[in-house]
Image (cartoon, rainbow, N blue to C red; front, side, top):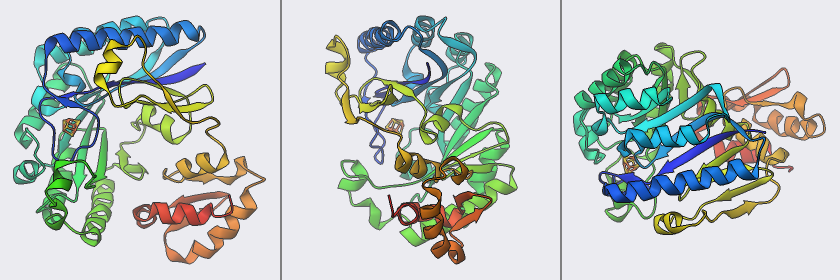
Length: 366
Ligand code: SF4
């Protein structure tokens, strides 16, 4: 039984005003120690319950995993030793502000082999407006330190739709990120989520509107392609062969287990999530898992997730459902929003911009 393992680290130096991921501000060392023990306890429980379980990807996400001591990564990976493929992809998200040479060397030695850096922009005024605590020079230095530590598989985040961002500054950011030698770039459009500081402050009136953000997205897709980054998912781009193996599991409806508050799992025929509650996770004994779906990964869900990928939906795999999807695809063929041929339907970059609408139209009969 093969799965990906996601470990959520819910600590950040300071909460970014746009972020709705579950994390708490502060870096209390004793809390981190208790957190480590709870992660190990929960991971071991899975290993005991599923004797044939093994992992081919591990992803330390957050929050800010790079705030944890290097020993944390050694402990977690040590705990699944013997259940971890030798060529497993093991990613740690890195906040550029936390890049420390000695620590990254140790983390690399513990087995982590991929870093995902929250760079977001190469323009310092945009980073300030986003409320980030780093500037671009620090981000570039973080990537250099990671490379020196032996990480050659590095991803960077690029935000689209920041206050003041325009065509020129976006192209400048793409070029600057590419010049860092990143193998992968995730490019998300800023969403003002309820519960965030941006939402409370009504920041949506000063960020680029939907139309402008859409133009910037299409420009990012084009500029990234010119730099050799192939789009393989709505928000993800990579050099050939450097797609995120862990994240592909989400879109391919493969098994993954999430440990930590707010972590999601799709495993052993169920989809479930852990409540966003650090204290109950720590006091345990084991994380609560609230089931959202008892029978995930039916045709509708698989098709919906596949259509997020540039590779699209391969209808040859679904001969019973194919005619109904093709009937709907015919109606969209001339819009420029989908590609349809050889039994495969995929969305174009313009289609990705309205993916919810297009996907629900394609799957209207299910
Ligand atoms: S560092 Fe990342 S996880 Fe933490 S608040 Fe900022 S965006 Fe959210």
